[in-house]
Structures are given as C-alpha cells and as structure tokens.
Amino acid sequence: MRTPTLLLYGIVALILAWLIIPIIIIVPMSFSSTRFLTFPPPSWSMRWYEAYLGSAAWMQATRVSLIVSVSSAILATILGTAAAYALNMTSSRLVRSLQMLLLLPLVIPIVITAIGLFLVYAQVGLLASMTGLILANVMLGLPYVIIPVLVGLRKFDPTQEMVSRSLGMNRLRTFFVVTLPQIRPSVISGMLFAFISAMDETVVSLFISGGEYQTLTKRMFTALRDEIDPTIAAISSLLTAISFFMVMLVAINAHSTDRKQGKAA
Image 1 (tube, rainbow, N blue to C red):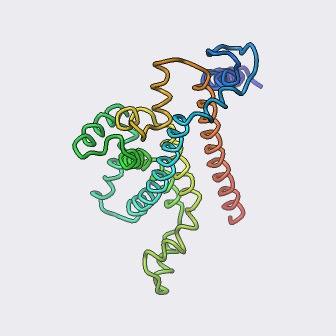
Image 2 (spheres, rainbow, N blue to C red):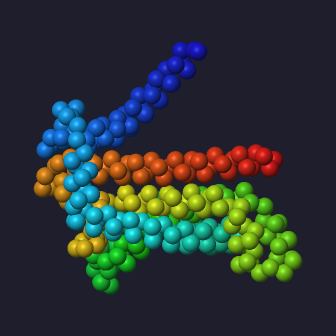
Image 3 (cartoon, one colour):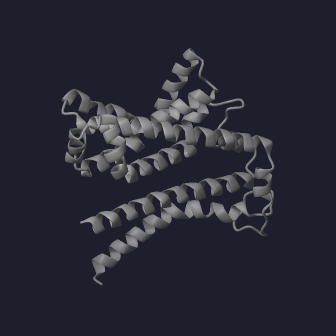
C-alpha cells in the first residue's frame, strides 16, 4: 500500500475518532457508582439507569418525546411522500420551485426557526402543547422524508403507472398498488430519519415545550443547570443506542433494497 493511501486512511481514522470518542466516553460514565460524572468510573453500578426508570418526571418526559416522535414521523411521512410524488410528477417550474421551500428547515439555523415558532405559537395558543410539538417536528422532519422518497421515485419507471391507469385504476389506487410497494424502502428510510430528528430535537423544544408537555431533551438540558449527575449520561447512552439502532435499520433497509434490485437486474 502506497504512502498517500496510508496517509489518507490515517486522516480518516483520526476524524472518525474525533467524532466517535466523545459519544463513546459517555457510556462507561453512565455506569459509574459515584455521585458525579467521573472518567474512568471508580466502580460500576446500574443506579443511574434505575434512577431514570424510577423517576416519574423523567418517565413523563420520555412519554412525551415518544408520542411526539412517533406521531410526527407518521405525519411527516404521509405529507412528505405526497409532496415528493407531486414534485416528481409535475413539469411546472413554479411547483418544482416549492422543493426549496420544503427543504428550508435544513438550511435555516434551527434557533431562528425556534424563535419564529415561539412567536407564532404565542399568538395562537400552542405553546407548551402536544399539538404544537407535533406540528413543529412534522415541519422539521419533512425534508428527511422528501429527499429519500424523491430519490426512490426517480428510480421508478413511470410507465408502470401509465399501464395501470390504462387498465382502469385511478391515480390514488395506482399509487398504493403499483408505486408505493416499489418505493417503500425510501419511504421507510424517510420515516426513520424523521423519527430520529424528532427524538433528538432540543433547540425548538426549549422554546415551545413546557409544563407536562416537556420533552426528554429539554428536561435533560434544564437539569444540567441544577446538577450534573450520571443520570444524564444514562439517558444520553439510551438515546444514542436508539439513534444507532434506527440508523442500522436504515442501512439494512438500503442494503436489502440494493440486493433485490441486483437480483432483478
């Protein structure tokens, strides 16, 4: 192996280590038996996981986050898939220009979005409400659905829809019977990414959630102001595991799709 190649591998390994080590180091700290965050832990214990699972306040925040994440992922998937289908089918420049508008949550700094939502919600009475949290995360999750679904639709042969409609099916039934089964991996990937986005979202939650509708990430952030204890590390480890599991599902889904397409070819 040549020196430039070894150098490239070394640089990539250093970058990966820089990204991964701060995440991995939290895991052993969550099993510490001490009252404060220390690394390496002097001894091992599950007390902070028990403290999290036994706390009514933490469990309430977890329930809110799960309800918001699942609900917003489902709604974002439905709306994002419909939007991607419309963008793919239309030839109008005006309609296609809406794609940039739908992808704005990826471009605009999240704190600006949060301030805007706070000001709007304050006027319409959606602050500290489940509805407000779900709607905000639907907006933030739409780009994560639209992008993969658009990719799936552009790989799909539209003549299959034309054949189906020529045999008497309407457009809606054609979509569910012919199109959706073939773009299903892209839809699933978008839904999983929308779920991860909602589960990990913090900045918007700091502005618009509160009371009994306080998300887990906001409660973690506010708890850090009072006292830094390993309970935060335990919750962070669980959230990291959930995110990793979701990303693995996306990777497995993409891999199985590639294998099916390879066999079909």
